[in-house]
Length: 488
Image (cartoon, rainbow, N blue to C red):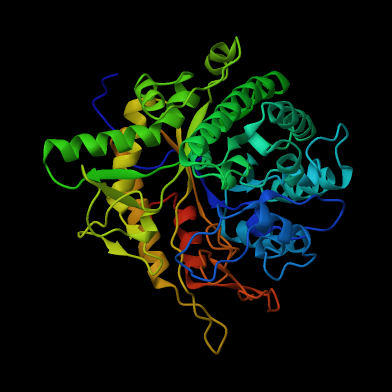
């Protein structure tokens, strides 16, 4: 639609805030009848640049099941939001948060995942959290599954590898949709659904003893079950409350061709398609044609039941949310200097700075991503993760001077504003994570993202005292000005 004008800034009601996950934040892993989750059997990495979330084997799982402590499993303790939620939400309110993204720990509601009656103590906890948020007019943005399915479903039916898990998931979503129908408006079905192709973290299925082709078959079949579960949950939620806004969530891996060589450009296009395949299904409601070739060439056959394609079409999401931390470079041979932080999917970009964890910092890439997603899907977009993991130092007088975090966020918000001027419909920004929490990739505490410092080390020692960093007051000013005042 032609207009002789364009937006000058973020819309009124823009959802400024922060994002977390229960398994990295809550703690209380063995309280009030909560069950173990898949996240709570992942050991802390000994190498901070070596991801651990998909290194779960039958042997390591057996070891975890017989360990009654959180010593080697930091996600069990988180940063004890379970007992500090009032204090933490008050700090978010002081910053002026309009939204707080959090996940419901499925195993706090259904401890083993297959019960027919929910755990009332778990439901009551989230009632208290949502009521506390309402007190400060903060909108909860709730992820239904954030790498934390009940471990009981892994042990019983190998997680999402079984179609039975769809029924278990829909029993859970039915309960929480109805319980919180008038407390929560914004929902996400699966966090970074493309993580299902990584393995255990996304599927809850043990497949490390399978041959590579069998792994691919299992992971894409498990993914199909998640697609169906998501589409059915969207329909279910809309029937319960027509005002619900239910979205999908993608780990966006923006990539560039290594050169202008046509073969490199084509390789980057293929890499981009492989990332956007997931949102093609959830936003457009169908598998894209290019995946037919991928499945055939890799010996993958998706077992679909009659009606599955109709379910996907009827269960399209209301908005598309995504995480954005970095960009990658792709070449025909995928050769060159690899960056560990780019999750080995791409090559190192010589034009970009790199964080101490090897993540390449690319604010302009966020604008490119926003325009790419808007052009492809034409649905509202929501940045629900973006941030800088760093080793923050607490000074002798109890302060944290994190100018590097302010610089990172400022540059990304500037590019968000440019994308809005380009015409992108952007509904909100919840940076990761407003309070220090346990790292998803390595289960360490030293990799900090927050505006709020938590006094806890990698071994779990510390007072858990909350301390405002310099970035706290800066973000407060950003929100108060609706993104107009980014001065330091």
